[in-house]
Figure 1 (cartoon, helix red, strand yellow):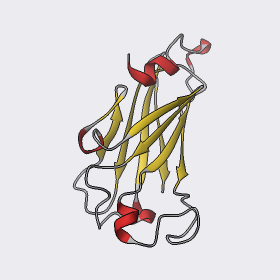
Figure 2 (tube, rainbow, N blue to C red):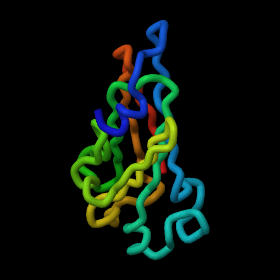
Figure 3 (cartoon, rainbow, N blue to C red):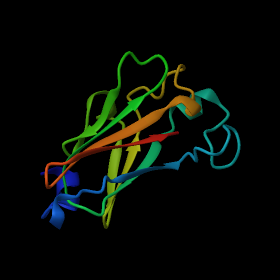
Figure 4 (cartoon, rainbow, N blue to C red):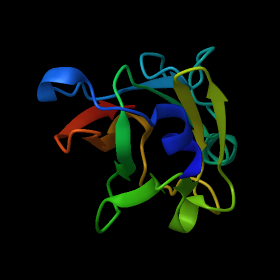
Amino acid sequence: MGIFGAIFGGEAPSGGSFTAPTITVISPDPDVDAGDPGGFDADLATAQATPIVLEIDSVDSVSYACVVCRYPGARNEIVVYAGGAFRGEFAASSWAEVDGTILRLHALPDGGWPDSASPDDITFDIDAIGGDGSELTTTRSV
């Protein structure tokens, strides 16, 4: 079942409707410039080693969710988290926390964020399938 299923499992909402989970970038603050308090560090090496913290919250039952990211220089979207676990280049350096209905992901690719990944150009998407089989996507840019 994994972390996501354990938190958001259960019955689908009545009436066949499904509200997509929200995804919010918590840290570094996407509205703060690099080098300013709350933003990425001004030092490139430090910024590259900084996890991006995402919070995913759901009011409805989720049977499956997948978080992906995109940034310049990446050939395709990169799967960050799916099926209750971090995937691929995010498997070793990332971690998750659970707080009620919130799944908090600390996402950091192995070796850090590449030079081509400007904080303003990183986008995270969550694709979620509700307990009733409906599918929705939520996007959040850093």
